[in-house]
Every structure is written in structure tokens, then in C-alpha cells.
Length: 282
Figure (cartoon, rainbow, N blue to C red):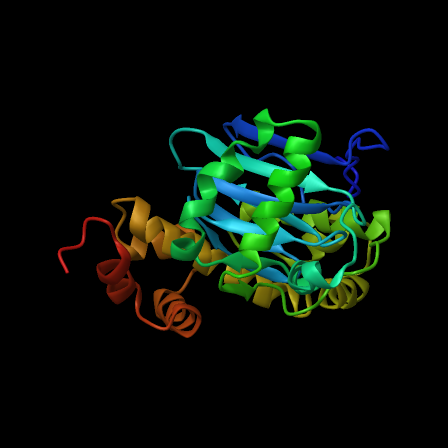
């Protein structure tokens, strides 16, 4: 298990890094780092965890994460192809705090909750962003600053309810990384609290308090959100029946699955599938 603090090797000669990621899986666990991060998803679907937020992700998303905000992307196991993204990471304090850049700093403060940008508004900015990994030196610096200035004028929404502005103790983060990995592997079956507590060497009561403090809600509320997001993805990406999907996502009662899906997604599984499936004939 990797430590929660992800080392990003920047120094006085290099304060920005841009890179392309292309592998079968987004393998990095729930982690944080002292740099800001801008991530564009090119290919892959699954679930993203930003602070205390859990929800689906899909190609075309651009997410800005302030320093120290825990995050990870878990791609759906059934997906074909690769998990591809373009990422920019940069040190705090590399841009001068001048009045002309106030909109950028306001956006970065808001990004302590994680923000996702409106796809239509950012469309003209994606190609310049995808070129970042090929740039170096002052060209990279100027391009990033130009992109952030343009993004500060775009519509965006926050993701996490809580702000994360301070370092999380490495021990806490490692525990949460283990929990995230366990849930992504075993969400399709009944999960017992004692399993999670044993996984991180805590009593059940201590684990419940720890998880609620970290994620802002009880573990089983979080697990239900994860399962419903997985079910929603399967409704769009597979040919399974609704009942098959319910059981595959760990629900032993189909009526309960229907109620939870409607509560979370605002519609029944069938209506959701008809409204959002690419093959729908609306």
C-alpha cells in the first residue's frame, strides 16, 4: 500500500509538471499532495473520490484540486480500453498575488472542495491543455497561467462538502486508502463493519467515528453511494437487466435497490437508463 502522501518531485528549477497517463487502470490510491492539480479525463469511466465526495466520472471532465485535497479515480472493472488522462501539477506560490490574478486565487481557494468545470464552456481550452506535457520552461508557465485565467471565467461546481486545506496525517490517509481499495473490490457482496475495522486495526466503534470524521457520513451511507454510482454506470455500459445489476452491486433486496437508486439519482433505474443511455431513442 502506497503512503497517502504522494511525492511530486518539483524544485527551484521546476515548479510545474504536465504529463499524460495511459494505462489499464488509474492505480493511484486515495492520496493528497502539496501541489495543486488539474486533471482532464480522456478515456475511461468509473467513480471519483474528491474529499468527501463520491460520484461517477466520464471522458471530457476537467477537475481542479487544491493542494492537500485527498482524491483518486477508480475506473470501472468491466471497461474496455485504457484509462487516459492529462494532468498538470504545480507548486503553491508560483504566481504573484496581484489584483489582476484575483479571480485565479479565488478559484483556487474554492478548489479546496474540488471543482468540476462546465464541459461546453471549457471545450476551446482542452486542446491547449493537452499540449502542456510537451511544453517546458517559460512556455509551460505562461500556458498554465493563461489556462487558469480562462478557467476562472468558466462555470464550475464544487464537489466535496468539506474543505481540505491542511495535511492529513499519513496514518489516517493510509487507512482511508485501504478502505477505498477494499470497497472497490468487494462492493458486490455484503460487507461487514468488522471487516473494515480489522483491515485498519481498529475497533468497530473507533472505525465508525474515524470514517465519519474523514468522510462526513457513516460508512454504510458512503457504501450505498458507491454502489448506486456503479449501478448507474452499469445501466449505461452493459446489457445486464436491472435486477442483475442490483444483485451485482451488492443489494440483496431489489425493492431496497430501487428505493436507494431513486433517492440518489432522482429517478428509477429504468427511467435513468432511458434518459441517459447512448443507445436510447429519445
